[in-house]
Amino acid sequence: MKTTYTLMRATQRGRRRFFRGAFATAGGAVLAGCDRLSNNEAFVDTLKSAQNLSHAAGKVVAPKRAMAQEFSQADVPASFRGNGTLDPMDADYQALRQANFAGYKLMVTGLVDKPLELGLDELRAMPSRTQITRHDCVEGWSCIGKWKGVQLGHVLDQARPLPQAKFVVFRCFDSMDGPTLDGHDSRYYESIDLDEAHHAQTILAYDLNDHPLPVINGAPIRCRVERQLGYKQAKYVRAIELVESFAQIRGGKGGYWEDEGYEWYGGI
Amino acid sequence: MDIEATSPPPAAPAIAAPRRFYRHRLPVRAMHWINVLCLTVLLMSGLNIFNAHPALYWGQVSTVKPWLSLRAVDTASGPVGRTQLGSYEFATTGVLGLSSVGGQPTARGFPSWATIPGPQWLAMARHWHLFFAWLFVVNGIAYVLYIIVSRHLARDLVPTGLELKNIGRSIVDHLKFKHPTGEAARRYNVLQSLTYLVVIFVLLPLVVLAGMAMSPRIDTVFTGWVGLLGGRQSARSLHFLAAMGLLLFVAIHVFEVIVAGVWNEIRSMVTGWYVLPAEHAKKEAQP
Image: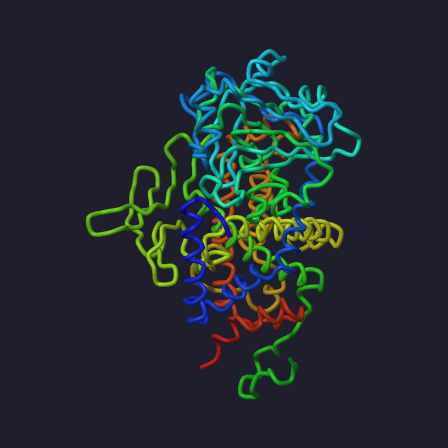
C-alpha cells in the first residue's frame, strides 16, 4: 500500500503490531475478529456497498441542483488550511512554478469533440464565479474559504463531451509517493460524474481569499466540488479527461484515495 | 423454564408462585439485538473516525480552540497523553491521547481496544460505520413504526398520569436498588419508560440528524439547515455527545439488568418469557 502521510505509514506498522498484540488477550478476540473481517475482501465489499445507498439517497433528498451553503466575508479566516501535498516536488511542476505558472496549460482531453489547452489568462478571461464555502475534510475538520474560478460546466461546454462520456477525471501534478522515478505513477487524481461536474458551484478555482491560489492549496488550479469531502477537490490540476469508465485508470477506483480504500462517493 | 421447578418450598406457603408472562414480542426482541450489534459497531468505528482528528469544536469550522481534544504531547520524559476539556487539562497517558498499540506508545485519541478496526484506519472505520448506520436507521424506523402500530408505545412506554405523579417514589426506589415485584413488575416503571422515551425520541434522532449534518450532500437539502445545529463542527460535537449519552444509557441499562436479575432479564429479551419476582412484603415476612 502506498501512502505518503507519515501518520498513515505509522498506521500500517501499528496495524501489524496490533494483530500480534490483540490475539494475546481474550478480550481482544472479538476485536481481532473485526480486524480479520476488515481484511476480508468479500466482507469489505459488502460494507462498501452502503455507499451506493448513500449516493442514491443523497440524490433523492438533495436534488441535482441543490446548493452548498455559502457564507459571508466575515466568516473567512485569514488563511486556509493546507493538507495532503503542500509543495509538489515534481520537476514539471517546479519548472512551471519558477515561471509563476506563465507556461501553464490546462489540458481538456478524452471523450470530447474539441480538446482544449487553456492558459491561466484564458481561464481568467472566462466568466467567473466567486463562492465562500466550507471545506470538510474526511478526517473531520472544516474551514471556510473564498474561492474564485470558472465553472467546470463552462469549460466542458466548450470542449463538448461526447455522448458516451460519463466521468470527469482530474489529473494532477503532485506525486503522492515523491517525484516520479522508475515509471511508477503516484500522481494524485480524482473523478466526479457529469451531474457533479455541471453543478453551479463546481469550479476550477484560481483565487483563494482574493489572492492567486497559494501553492499549499493547489496552485495554479484546484477543483472545488462543494457537495463532497475534501479529498474530491483535486489540487494542482494538470489535465481534465472525460472518460466512459475509470476502471482502467490506475487502481480502478476513480481516485488516489479511492485506490487506498476510501469511498468514491465523497458526499457523506 | 418450568414453572413447577421454581415453585417456592412448602415451608413458605404464603409466597405466591412465581408467574411467567410473555413480556417481549418477537419483533421487539429481534430489533433489540440488531440494535445491540449496530450500536456497538457504530460506537467503536465512530471512535476510530474521531481519532482521525481527535478534537471537537463549536461552530462551523475547526479553526477555533477545541472544547475537547485528546493529544499526545512531547515532554522531557517522553510523550504523554493529554486530554483537554475546556480550560482544563488532564494527564491521560495509556488511555486517551497516547496509548499502547502492540506494545508501542502511539498517539491516538481513543485506545485500540475501543475502536473498530483496532489500528488507526479511517477508510475502513468509515465503511463499518456507514454500513451499520444504514442498518441502524432502517431498524430504528421499523421499531418506531412497530411500537406505534402495535400500541406498545401507548400501552407500555408512555407513563400514565398516576405513574408520573408517583415519580418521586420511583426515584427513591431506584436509589435503594429496590425493583418492583409481583404485579408491579409487569409494567415498566416510570423512570424506565421516561428514559426509553428520551432515548428513542431525543438521543437516537439527534445522533442520526447530527451524523447526517456532517454529510456535505445532505447539508444541501435545505441550504443552511446545519446552522440550526450550530454549524458543521457543532454537529460533529453533538453527534459525539449523543453517542456518549447512548453509552451512558447502555451502562445504566446493563447495570439495572444485573441488579434486577440478569438471567431473568436476558431470557425475557431472548425468549420473551419473564418470571415475575416474588412480592417484597411476603418475602420480608419470612424469618
